[in-house]
Amino acid sequence: MAQYLISFNDEWVPEHTGEELGAKGIAGRAVIAEMEAAGVFVFSNGGIDASTAICSVEAKDGEPIFSDGPYVETKEHLGGFCVIDVPDDETARYWAGRLAVALDWPQEVHRFPSSERHNRPSETA
Image 1 (cartoon, helix red, strand yellow):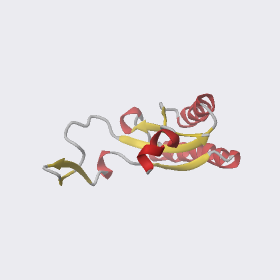
Image 2 (cartoon, rainbow, N blue to C red):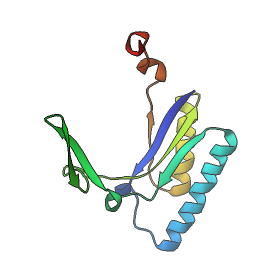
Image 3 (cartoon, rainbow, N blue to C red):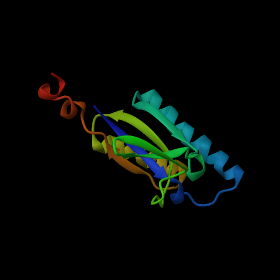
Image 4 (cartoon, rainbow, N blue to C red):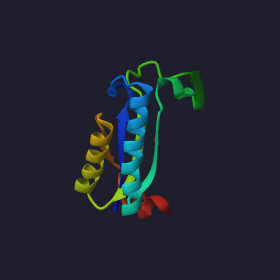
């Protein structure tokens, strides 16, 4: 099994009325309920955009430097995401497709690196 991030950028979502967004929320939650029933759902959250950014932080001379709002160079903002734990890329694509159809906006899929790759014996000793 591997974990996958299914996400979308806020800028990919066309303008919707409050009623339309409510209907999209119902449709998206129905897919999440199916993921839960299938035992693949890990975590999700949505409704985030540039207005929800608290700060940016970068390192300078070994110290964190905080600034208000999103990083200056950011042109797109994460709008929502879902983490699933499935056996393969095909299954991750299936669930991402279900969300894309339910929400009617694009989704992007990323596979998290396997934990074995990050926990090599020489690194954990």
